[in-house]
Image (cartoon, rainbow, N blue to C red; front, side, top):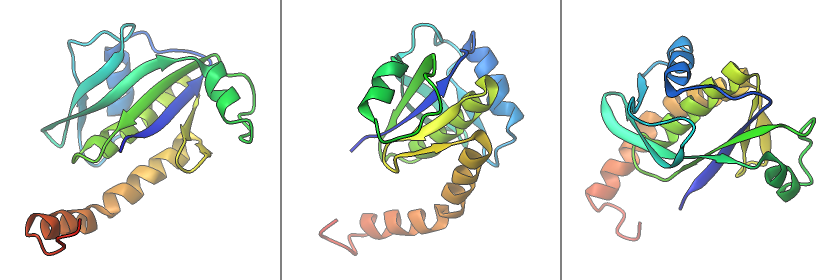
Length: 157
């Protein structure tokens, strides 16, 4: 199952290099490196990344901000944002962390917001950074669950 978040903003970054600088400036507890050979303007699909020095990544596309706002009429978006960057990720290790870290840095660099479609909630960059801290704090629990699944302790999962 894929999860989707968006960054809504009124400006775009010009390159993956600029985006990587924004990620580095966040000083996340674990390193995230975006693929250096991808083109920011041509983002349309899987964006490889390295999270904690392991292969990871997420789907990333430029999106129509008006369609997002129209699809969620019950959400108070504040104003008609000019740009949207979509992030889709699954359950593979590192995808959740990579997407949220990249989205948070992008939102801060563009003075935008992160919109979590699962929660139906908008996050300011500082709030999105708190989400990352919660994700990181739950890592031991997620690792224990993965280990239990791998050992077939829960055969129905």
